[in-house]
Structure formats: structure tokens, C-alpha cells
Image (cartoon, rainbow, N blue to C red):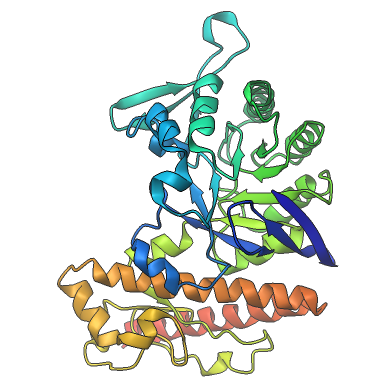
Length: 403
């Protein structure tokens, strides 16, 4: 893996990530697409080609999904994830997104494990077993084990969380045949500025390729998040890639970009898709010139629309006029409304294609704003207009309910 920062605009930065398996470099900030056992939740293998290239060529996989079936030994004999899935020109970032619950020290040693829910019941995962998984999967980059905690835990628990995460990182590096060549050091600390900073400083001392910032989206206040992000990024070297989990909403992504994050791992698109929503916010340059024209639709909030709503039953327009995605080019809102009502999975396939396409375009706008030196203006305008649309939505709902 090779990563280079090309442009800095305040705290925001634009760079290029080159992964060995990808034919073209991936520009950052970038969206890392979530998967279930290596493929997006609903997009089939043949439809992956309909997504923008090369923006869509980096996937997140949870190594825990491969712990039992197929076994690490089987995957290793096949040749790793790329061979197993037949996705030779895609990049994989292995990050254990499942909630890990740490257990006490095992038999008085300093080797600790984490328990998690698996199909066969609750399992204990030790660093040795975790590293066996990494060696069999052969991802392009992978994150060390992390003891993530919600925002409301005590300071004592935050201290323990950092100590365990750093110890696990040391274990992973010592067990890694490549000596940390592709490892992202996990950074935790909950809602404690001091512990976030301490963890970042400790991890930065290790031989890691980059950093995986975890523990966000677990109850912290959105207003306090910028300080927590800055406490981490200010302590990290500028030349290494920064990966974050848990920031998915557009406002949250902009917070992360402002703090200097490069890669975003989120299930936002999945939750929109499973709920029957399509993203419709305009993809302009952030000056608001077209945002005021976004109409209010039943079940929407001026940024997304609910395709389950009856208003779309006879709507023969695409999800978004002018959108070049496969769903918008070949199908209508009425058809997707019908598919949702008869519980056909094709509805989720089409929605995930559109939502992924739309969100990747949003990241493209962010990169262009950074390169042009006006990211802060773009961010301010985007949030202001989005907030205005939400206020209009709430006002219209009050008017409807009051009759």
C-alpha cells in the first residue's frame, strides 16, 4: 500500500491511495463500501461494474464473518479473499466492526481476548486467532483488535480500553509475518479527550501503516465530536492514512474530513436501502443554487425520499433526474415502489446501486472542494442548506398534523 497527501485545505486533505490489487489509485477522502462476507449487501457481482471506477473499488470486510465458515485454513488454501471472491482488482480493508466485548486477562497472562456473537454462540477471540484470520484472508489493509466503548462509560473504563487496545496492537504486530506492513493501528478512548490523545500518541509510536479510529457513533454528542477527532488527528503523523468507523451522515462525514480523515467506513447506505429510502439531495458545488428547488415528498426530508410512500405508485420519473446510475437509467420510482410493496429484493438492489452511486458523487464533490481551496465554504453551505431543508420538513409536518 502507498498513500500520499497531495493537497491540504485547513484540516481537510486530499490524497491518493494505491493498493496493490487495484488497477488505478483511489483518491481520498473516500468511501469504503460495507460488505457481508466480501460483497455489498444487495449489489450482485455483475452489477459492481455499474458503480463509478475506481471510487467503488475498496471494500470493508469483517474478519469475524470468516471465522467459522469457510474456515481460515480453507480460505488460505484458496489464496485469500481476492481469490475466494474473484475480485482481483478490488481492495479490501479488514476491520472487525462487530461489537467486541473484552474479557479479563486469560489465566493471569497479559494476553487478553474479546468475545463476540457468532452463529455457533458467543466466542472468545485471542490475538493469535485474529492474526491467523488476517494471514488467511490476505486483505490489502487490516485493523488491529480494538476495545471500543460507548460515550457514557467512566474514565476508568476508558483508561482500560486504551491499555487493552494498545496491548492487542503490540500482540498483532509481534505475530504478523509482514511486521506491520499493512496494519492500521486501532485508536479508542471513548468520549475522553485525554484518553483519545494518549491512545493516538501510543499507537503513533508503533510500526503501523496507518490508523483506524474507532469508538465513534456510540453515543457521543455531535457537538463534542470535533474536539475528540482533533485530539486524535493532531497527534498523528501527517503522511499516514487515517481510517474511521461510525461516521455516516453527510454532516458527520464533513466533520471527519474537516479533522483530516481519509477513509470512511459506514453502514449509512445500507440502512437507507433497507428502509426503502433513496438519496436525492442535489449534487451541486455547495453554493445552494439548486438546493432550494428540492421538493418535499411524503416520507422524505428534502435529502432522501421514502419509496414505500403511496405518492410514488404512479410516478414514472427516475429516482433523481439526470442521475447516471443503473437504477435511474433503467427504472422508475413507480417500479421500485411496486417492488417494495411486493417484497422483491430487486428493490434493495436498485436502491443500493443508486444510493452508493449518489454518495460516491458526494465524496467527489468534497475532494474537488479541497483541491480548489474552498472546502470550508462548501461544508458551511452544505450544512446550512441541509438544516434549512430539515426545518422546512418539520414545519410542513406540523402543518399537516395540525390539519
